[in-house]
Image (cartoon, rainbow, N blue to C red; front, side, top):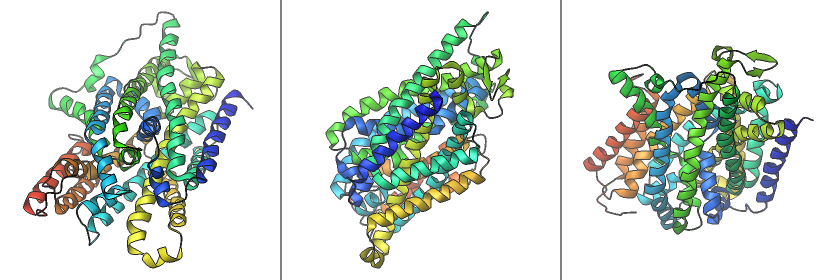
Length: 481
């Protein structure tokens, strides 16, 4: 067994061990959904960051930077800004609100805040989350297939199957506690990958004869001018809007042991995000130079140009194998798997929780009386994982594209609704429903095409919908969170 394989096997043993251990601590839906609100600021911060930055950050963004160059700087700035905004304006108020209403999920928070006796908010929110998360989890399975294909030579189909089985298993066993504690380990590996690999790449470039690494500043707008350049920049910045509406991220705010610790977690999360995002972009930029310099190989073949790499999202594991000691490469390639797993497990957990807690527990009471709700939640974890695997198997989209779609849809559907619920006393149930419908509809139906990304247009339309319908049909209540 070579060093890369051994490092990867040891990593898998670690996270599966966490799954077995936390299974003993998971005795109720409160434990399964939020870890019993007994996790401290360090675990929450690393869990939020590792869950937020999936295989998209390890594979998708470097691949995009390889192809688009410095245009992806706008994405980096947008994401970091969105993380900072969400921690400052969502985290503490949401933790206080979830404690006030004893809510385990975002749909349950909306339902209790607006006295939703008919269940319309709860049902709609649960279905939207499940819809977009299926795409999102499929993207993570696809990312696993690519990494394992590059690393071990197995087919992408086999890689997707292996990743899916592992994720579903430890999410099934330990719930939120398993997800959060494995996220801590995964977050440490991810930040190591995203900081050290580009540094090694810069050193490698400096050792090449006649090397002169330069950024092509013309790619800052991808060669576009005028309104087209402005639209390209706004498209990248718009990634930041999604953070406040991602259920698998805001759930971390709800799960922290006490609101006062949000401040500590915030500092940790932001300190993680800045080097991670810039490191991801630099992997793509340095990879462009190394490919054209003809110093990278894959499957025994020398890659003499960017065009020789048939899939740009395989760049990170190829660079790790070529530039690092096999032991370190094994750990860092595990970082790519860690990124995929830390997001997929969180999304599986949230999807399972909203279906179990918000739909089955409320509308299938006869079933609940006969079957343990925790058992139902674990069965749904398997079902959703299977659907996501089938979608990943059938899809030809890049990880970057699938994540962009799901990220934009969740951000637009829940971001404006949640932000205004926490900060605006006049928001109404009708306004929140209108915002969620508008966010979903205008993500699916992209009105503006290449000119304005749906991540921005759907968010703005949803925000206006919440405000307008709240004013047109108020709840006659000023219950501030």
